Length: 194
Image 1 (tube, rainbow, N blue to C red):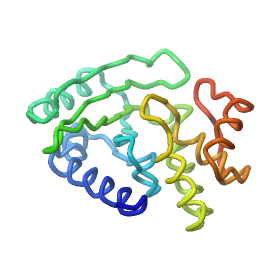
Image 2 (image 1 turned 120 degrees about the vertical axis):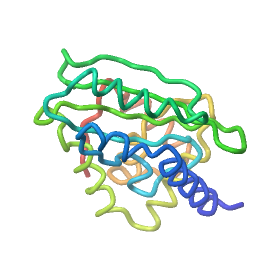
Image 3 (image 1 turned 135 degrees about the horizontal axis):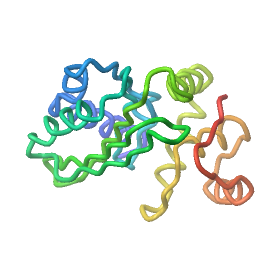
């Protein structure tokens, strides 16, 4: 299977998981606005099986957030859930991470960042995804997917690192990417927009 076929297959599986979990409808059920962000939104999902949502409410009601997650947990394919309260930080959010086991036994991570509407990062990562999609050429897309494919499974690398290296700095090989990362260490939230 080639890289583009693998990416297409994984992206299709991600959409099936979104449908099976009813994740968007669950969050909308507590009055939230739900936005897909990250690699699935930009068409750059490769082998790292994650699905990213930014979820907005005003006010951010902690009990409503827990109700949404309780409903998600009723799906027997959801095997684990983690929670981090960052309401008293610049991010003004609750981080939810859930792991969904697909029919092949593979785990998919669903990141649901429940954000206080009007806070610092309200809409920020949606704009980043729009800009990436706007400037991405077919050649850049293939370069990013290839770098993601060649990344060892033990490495934890943020998607934005690939995008910045390829789009801004012309990186095209994994050794070049390793050197680029050494020179551009990612700390905290990487605020880069193409």
